[in-house]
Length: 201
Ligand SMILES: [Zn+2]
Image 1 (cartoon, helix red, strand yellow):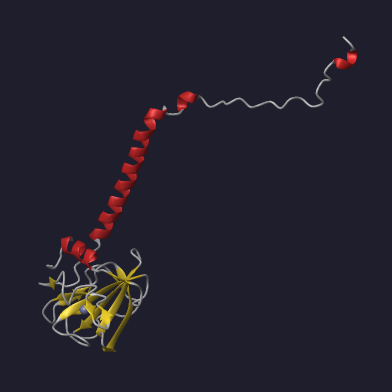
Image 2 (cartoon, helix red, strand yellow; image 1 turned 90 degrees about the vertical axis):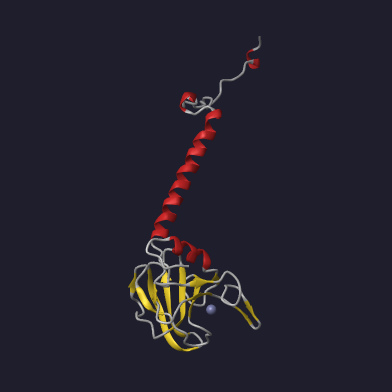
């Protein structure tokens, strides 16, 4: 054979492909992945449920006494009132019935004098919600910046401001503002009604 037909040796060595060192035995067989995923989902669900239980334990019904919450009608959240929509839920109770913080919160604002009558706004940082109470009998018994535990007194039921009949007008607003998007307060009220030391709903 003529010498020029020989293949010249490569200038650099062929790259060595690293062998796969992971032992396939350490990977679960494909059929076993589903139970692993199910177990992870169960853990996540359990953690979520525990978080929900902790939140529920820190909820108190805002009216400490006999109270009535109408599912429909003028006092219900979302009721259409001609020029506007009812942005809160009314909780009817006799004048003077104590009002308490629904959740652990900080007093964001208090005031008096307009259609809201005497009012107080509480900010719940854990839920990122603002809870607004209107028509209190007297100015709120708490001050801006005060930290409250669920169940601590904030005032009494009345009918001051734009109001017909003694009741708490309760608003739940998204975020840290009494002007945030209004949300239906009834889920939180229902939860509070089931909590220990509740008023009646
Ligand atoms: Zn109302």
